[in-house]
Image 1: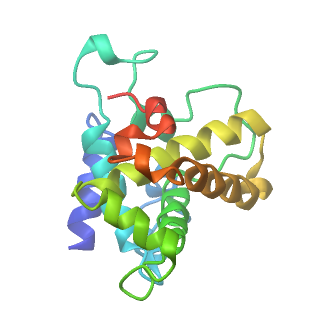
Image 2: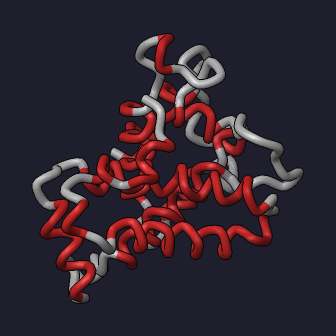
Image 3: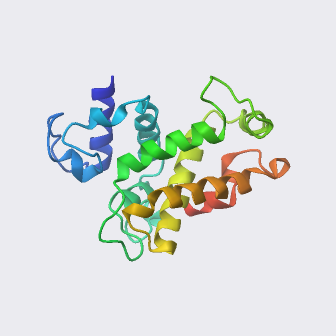
Length: 193
């Protein structure tokens, strides 16, 4: 299952390249820490792989009129095409794992359901949208990258950027009477389909 998902993500990320073996240095190009991406999934990180696949499927270019500099949100983030980049960039897929864990903590999902008032209210309001978590992941990734660029961050500042991302999402989710879908969040406008 995990191997099939990794293959699917590679094909979405690099449609014109041959699929590498599941032990290959090429996986590091995508942002895994080593030549075997499965080692990055300790502690339940498989959810992030599913979210990355959703992001790739839903925010890939569909029409030339919606492209930004010839690319879509997923490809722009994967290939770090926006802004002036740091010499030591965050690894794309490892960032996805961290964002997934951050969202699970933010929504209090670790124990199978939210326990905080904010977590319960968020899920109640967004519960009508089956893709809420997937879209929230995509928005969070875009916020994180925008903050990375604004801060001129380097790899050592990744945790600070992730904390900012969480606080930005919490601020945008706070006025829940105005938010019935992830698409109502101001940061959703950062995404290009």
